[in-house]
Length: 278
Length: 278
Image 1: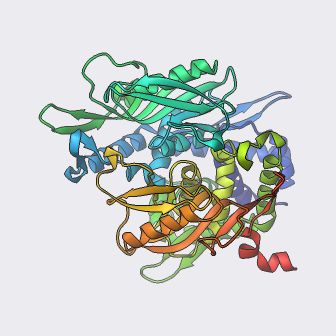
Image 2 (image 1 turned 180 degrees about the vertical axis):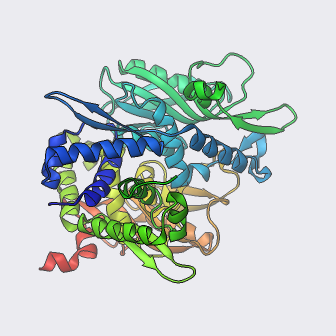
Image 3 (image 1 turned 135 degrees about the horizontal axis):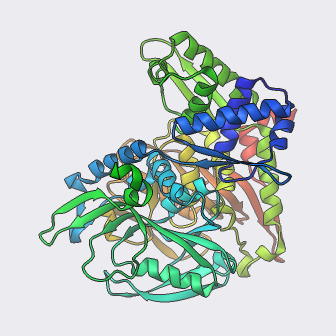
């Protein structure tokens, strides 16, 4: 269908948002819009400069026979800080405090707009890394894993606590959750991961890191590789964590007298270090 | 920031995709782009006609003091059929057959591109309905519920099978799953639903409808209202289903000798009846 530039830019923006991190040949758009290659090149250069100006990410252009373009979503430091500030404020509401020093946060990880924002933030860190899949463990980690996978455009894999018939045969690991000190089991369908796949582990909350560590063990069982670990919130943990290298958006600091203090996690140190130090 | 029309259209498309079903005043864009109201009106009319031409939905314009625009995502009949045909083909793979007549489909509901497509399809049916929240039960329904909620831009609520401390106090119901004939329990955090909220129930698979029916009971306990029921796949069930009025994308027909036949569910009858009959 022949489209005008203004129409092409609208359709192209929609197409790129729905195909992040995917190589698209310029021939694809030439055919889609029955337009000259030179017009498409110009469209793409307007697109790239606008996305960068609005801090929505960038378009990577590769030349040559196997060349094409890739939309890499991103987020600006200012918007990212705004997201974390809003989350911090919402979580500071005293009515969220639950017995045992826990915080009610399921509603936040059930809001599409919040999930889009934090998914884009966490995915941005790994936009140029090799990631073939995102992995999480049921239940509360799922929405976050899906949101991150959505921006990386890779499948997400859900580790289960129990065998379910609809998953087929599984591989399982036992582990001790460092915070609860209980022995638990997690299992993953054999069909869901192939050997050599590069995996980003995502979870909603990490204290001692025992659960995340068990997922790392599970990756080893599948001969898959760990690309990184990203959590929504890290909680205070006295002692050596099972996991040292991870990204957190928030830090939930619970003192002995039950006071809870919410602040930004290590995300900004890891992602906007240059800007932060200015 | 002052932007040219081509730049405005790119940024506006991105903004609308991330704010579906949300009333946006035209003043918002006037301020955002430091542009005249007449230019923004023209932008929006190009946007509306392009989205409609590409069958990506529409823009609803309301005039007057409380007026503004709303992006309502949609899907065309041709694209919807393509999505269902591809799913049918993928599910027909004999290696998906599991003991007991089950089908392995977790991978499909873990692919962002698949979830975007089926989320857009199921959400389209309820785009103009009163929906305040999407509800599902853990675990396999979650990705689908999130995908639908993403297009409706409402929170999604996860019913649990067990109490977890991080959910706070809950309301629970017992039910008999008609297919397994076991008594089960489901519970939902008291904080997650308010009285009078209008809820769309979403699940991955429905046979007898016992699980969905239990979610309807749970809605009554919360004095919330049912807007509709949408499932990814309905399975063969001999006898009277607990739920009669629902939308299904796929129909999984299992015969007594273990043969499985996958076809389209009732989605097209409910959504493109006029087109289908032509």
